[in-house]
Image (cartoon, rainbow, N blue to C red; front, side, top):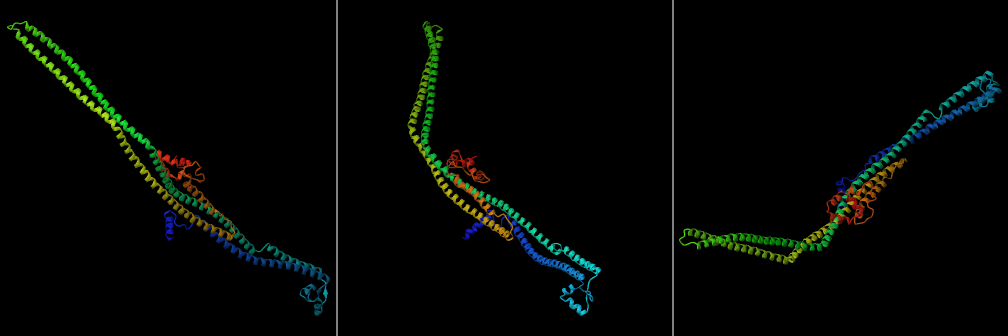
Length: 513
């Protein structure tokens, strides 16, 4: 188990993703938590301020109530004194009024007895003076009450401090909401980039799988081609031998005809020579006859006789030479014709031999073709076995890579959930609203792009006319499958046709353009 974990974490590093510790939006999470702490601090201060405000308010209300009570008492005191002044309820000795003694809880009558005084009425001037006195005192209290307004300065300042802190918290809440939205956008962009990297990597493994599957189809198709072509190969081999035999025979026949032409030419040449020689011979014999006739007419002592005898001897020699040459020429011509006819006889026997050898050569040629076909079939069979193994290996490698990429997604998703929970927990603590659906967006995008890529393993093969790749977001399959497209472009027309017959029609159309 520890080895598996080690390999997985090692792959994370090699794959360009060291064990995830935070997302690209971690800064927004930290900012939200920091702002929440500021809100909490503000809330604590607001609570303290409200307690202080309550104390200040109570003191203010007490002061206000006291002033109002004092004003009421001044009104009552004034009215009571004026009433006493009007009815003669003033002590003649101390000048105090009956209502004043009663306010102190003392008896006016007892006081008069003690001081031996009597009750006297107030003068008009005293009444006016008393009224002015109380009017001024009441007015002063009213001014003091009016100056209190809705609160004193300390209370108003505290209320402003509370309002400022509450506004600050509202602003911080808005900023927290904005941070949560920014967090979602940053993380979603990062997630899409990671998903793109992971699925591009998976496409490489899928390309290997598709290539291995196509190789199986190609080699099986070659086997079918070899088997289907054997009958034609046999016919072609026989026809080739016959064609070669005919060509050889035609060459021999042409040679024979050329030899016959040579004989004909030689005979013509001989006839022309003999005709010319015969003419010369006839002339020589005619002259010799004339010379012999002349000699017979001469006596033995005739002086012309030696000259005629010499001419006769010369003509005899010439006649013998011509006859000898004609004989030799006949022999030479006959020898030449005999030699050429012997060659033609040999050539004619070769023609017969070629005919008799056709069947044997066809058998040999077919045997050689069988060896070649068997070798090709063995090569294709071996290649099919290898390609089939490659399919299982590629499928296994892809399955492992899928597990690895899903592991990356799980790690990243857990991190997003953790950070999202931190945002939600922090915001709930202070009652701020936040965007909190990023975990669903990340999961949905992964499911979309992975499903699209994974569909290649089931939809691309075997042959069908179903719609292909209709849910891939943003990017078409051919863009991903550059390695597979390169493989296809290097195939012969026959091998490519084998791939076409075992592929989804729409998929093949996409990757073959």
